[in-house]
Image (cartoon, rainbow, N blue to C red; front, side):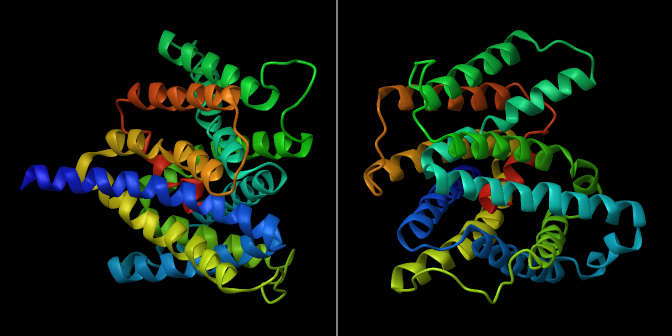
Length: 313
């Protein structure tokens, strides 16, 4: 019975990673092949996913539903998290996809955990240990190979793609660190649900959700529904289920398959050219994630997983 539960946990964790990778590729298709605007996809995803997560949270713990609104300090931090975390990570990630491709954008975003490691080293006034130092080196090397193919004279992706990708990594780092206190006090679905809903309402003033863009056909409908429902609510649920079944550390390690799944799909489905240097850079960054995740013994790494931008949130 225990082995069956563990196996199901492994399946859930890997499935969440694959769903996130697929969502990124579907986003690339919608932006580049169906002329959908980033702003519309971000606002509609935030609003629908936020409401669905709040409904899920209300069904789980009805008494906690409005609790976060009763504490002004927590509400202030929730609003900051909503705009500087959730909205920022969604928009920068999709912008990076539009200006490069899903594979490159996803891999660049995974530089975020390294930024967290550097931030924690500065805050704690403690130099990174050898494993963290190796992870930082590999992240820098992987990013260099991915965006230059080893040449300091040229970029292998557009400048806009590089800038949005690095901003996405910064947004992910903030998005991961900022809500720690809230997550320790309130259910994850409640924090993320309110954050997405608040962010979606605020972003509606940037782009109204009823101003639909793009060319709509069966593919557009199917991929949009996938990104909103499977890429947010379902992936969130199965990831949390995996955390309960096999633990946060193991789940986060398995979820690091996201950049690989995004890359494989981009290459074989969208025909994104990925040369040896791209694969080498991707592998370096994936190893970085594994090093940092395995080095954590306090469950901290459940936060990047639970709050994956693939949820995105």
